[in-house]
Amino acid sequence: MPKRILQGTVTSDKNEQTITVLVERRFKHPLLHKTVRKSKKYRAHDAENKFKVGDVVRIEECAPISKTKRWTVVTDASA
Image 1 (cartoon, rainbow, N blue to C red):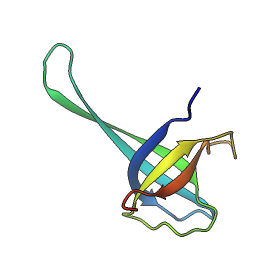
Image 2: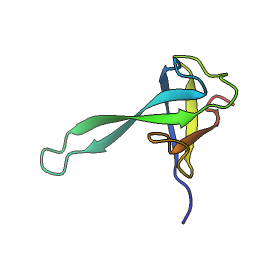
Image 3: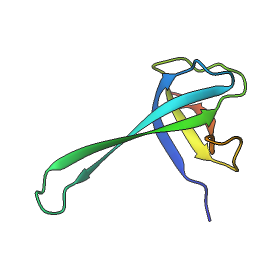
Image 4: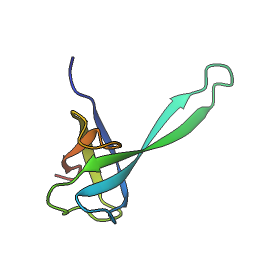
């Protein structure tokens, strides 16, 4: 099974080697036929502490690193 890759914006970098990434998805509501925006926050492993708040990054699924971290940063999305 392939690993999922998501793109989102860094909302917090206060923890050591951890960033919080806000991923937003858009879809059409099945009954109302209106575009709905849903967002979710993921905690991702950032080994070098190089990403700051506001950066757009790609994160990839990985084996559990801690109680809440199951994602790791692949690269910044602009590259």
